[in-house]
Length: 208
Length: 119
Length: 255
Image (tube, rainbow over all chains, first blue to last red; front, side, top):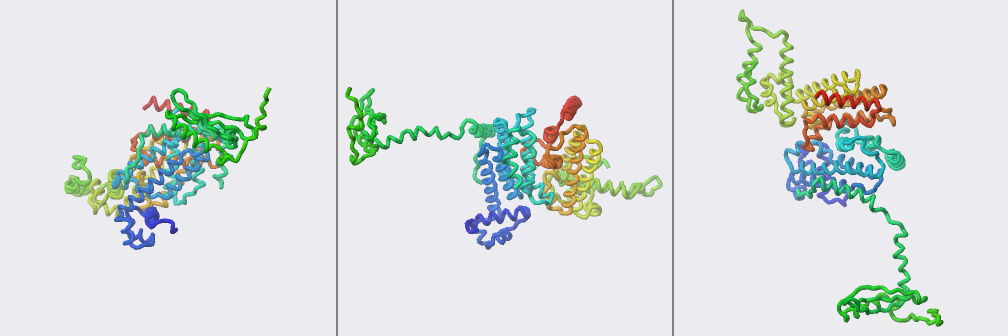
């Protein structure tokens, strides 16, 4: 992977190590070994561990913004599946973050602030996406006021906490199972038009 | 950390609403919608002359296009207007040269092509 | 035993009071009767289990306050009004205390679910949700730092995994029971009930974490139960719908 700069390689290695141990337990020597460079070389790119941690979080939030910008690219149901796949990849890559969230909050409060902002946007996007599907006739209108708000919350919880829960169960994060779980939230609310579209377009991708 | 761009959530919600509505208001266009472009192709096979008209205090540049095979098919289009006559003359000169298919004057018009009835 | 109820200072500040409370504790053990002979407690195990319970409760409070990583044995000892040596006699180290806490929590959850399994009507489900909520509030450090705890104390890991699987199966059984009595619609695809059970536990376990992250009220029971009931709502038959409405009406008028 010569196309990645040394800096990027360092960050990738750090993320791998953070996922393996806690953020606090990782030492600069380990990061250097994992990247395959010397500690001096590492120090040239990043002054100290603090700088590496900050850079990793920059990457994390950039990636998240990328996923947020993929809102409703196509008007079809598959668009939701695509965005959820991206979320799964994100939470798998940065799984150390959820684990250490409260520790991180104590040391770097501005990170929690950014995270809250991102989560707010994620929730809004899911809610508006549901509204869009209601307008285009794929989902039935709200059976009772407030149901789609709780559906949004449940969908969000499933997407965010799937990977940590799989970690607890010591099972590898299975993409097909994740898709099953998230679509199971929406399936009860599909109209007949929605179900046709689901069978035609989403189901084949889920099974592959 | 670099300062983050932040948007109040109500505004973000409205933006998402608009993005969703795009799919209802803006649909992919049909091929027939581009006919206005294809309809003008014959203009590239025309002889062009300019005509200046003084209207409402400005000098309007009109280009007259006549198809070289069937000169009765002709079209007059107002291009632009200038307040100064000299400027308009100069612009019209260059516009005609740009628009004309035959820049060196090798194309000629046959009077029989006009099919005029003298009755 | 009233001496230590004077103040409600934090563990650190109570350092100064250790001498007094130790004496009180010993007095309890070595109190004398009218003949001047020491009164032994009715059974030696009873006093020991009382101390154990005190230590575990104190540990839970410390963990909830400070987070599991920052608490030292000294803090727990101060909170429990025992000496560190006494505590070490009952629990070798912090690992043992955490394991004991987990065992206590798991036992409580098992009791809840076994009771629930007998007849899982909607009122029982509502009560189950209440109890789960109370447990979460009491052992909140576990729910906000679940992964950290599991990773730091690997002895709990496999036990916790089995416990989670068992919980899912219990809930699956409850849903099937509700289907057979006509309150839930039948499964549209095989495995849907299991999926629903998985969702129930995922959402209930992650609810506290979510409230912390969103800076929402972590003691808001109504939001907790609404989120969980919303999972079951698409499954209601007409009977189920009516029963749920009755439940809501009953709760509104009795709370």
